Amino acid sequence: MNLQTGKLYWPTTLLNAPSYDSLQEDIKCDVLIIGGGSSGAMCAHYLSDTNLDIVVIDKRKVGFGSTSSNTALIQYIGEKTFTQLANSFGEEKASRHLQLSKNGMMEIEEVSKTLPIHPDFVQRDSLYYASDPEDVPKLQQEYTLLKKYGFEVDFLTKGEISKLYPFNKEAAIYFKNDGEINPYKFTAGLMQKVQNKGVRIYEETEVKGRDIEKDSITFFTTKGNSIKASKVIIAAGYECLDFKKDKNAVIVSAYTVVTNPVKDFSAWHNRTLIWETARPYIYMRTTADNRIIIGGLDENIEYAKQRDAKLMSKKDKLIEEFNKLFPDMKVYPEFYLSGYYGGTHDGLPMIGIYDDIPHCYFLMGYGDNGMVYNMVLAKILRDVITKGSNADLDNIYIQTRSKL
Image (spheres, rainbow, N blue to C red):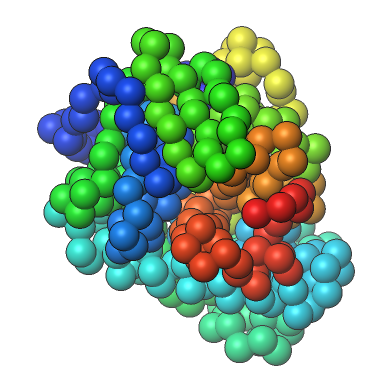
């Protein structure tokens, strides 16, 4: 899958990233993790504290798939709001999902403190504003529901917004204690940490076929080697769909720019994450070296050539949208890309378990908060593999049930 095209920013922030050999022999393990991005690294993190023999492989370099283009806004609310999820699944299930996401955010922060490579995690608040006056009642309903379940939010009026920012919006929800992170550094640091704990990691190792047995599954690499495992986690991001199509998954095209470094952020209250009620929406955040990431303008484009043909015009449009909010901040797109973005029809990430691929778990943390979802799902899979079950898998995140 042609995941992204353009000039990538995150790999430039870690020029001497750890590297790993490709697989050159036949091996066995207890758990094989296919995917060396953030989701694979998180699975390895949770399983590295068990007595299981863990192997991670990736067909690229570690972190060079979708992780290298992840904008990494660390939040618990996604494109489908609390209100929408509650309407679909009920308040109890929706609130549990949000609380698990909140827990996942906190665990990302705590893990970040332990890594040999600092991932630039910073706790940030978020501003979620009404793109149109007609959206204000929906914001008020969302705010009421969030407060009901104890989430730290404030409701800002037009006057309160204009005191904090150089733009006027009718209303906004102000979320406390979200965050931002460098996903590439996080993944590189986490992989280095789990390798030191005994996890075997192989880059540039691609699988092309499999042999299913009663108690194990063997994957074969394009170079002719084999990996036999009792359990397999396919944590290949959007490329999970190359292994198994799923009707709940939605792949669209999205666009991102990263600007030049900015000297003065005084007009940007607390350097909050910013996004809006419009769909598709524009979102923005800052970076450790004082750049601005602006993303959005998603389109339902399936083919990479069509997606990439719009990159130059989308790049300019994203800067234009930013300037509507911050007209006095002089920025230009120093990095820019077009890429695939995965979501789900129902708004929840999912773990796929399929009858025709036994011994395998598909980790699909699809949605706006991919890193957060991956942390939640990786922890659930740790319990499923080591204990045989997890209540949240059964109640929230499972896509297709089969015999574990």
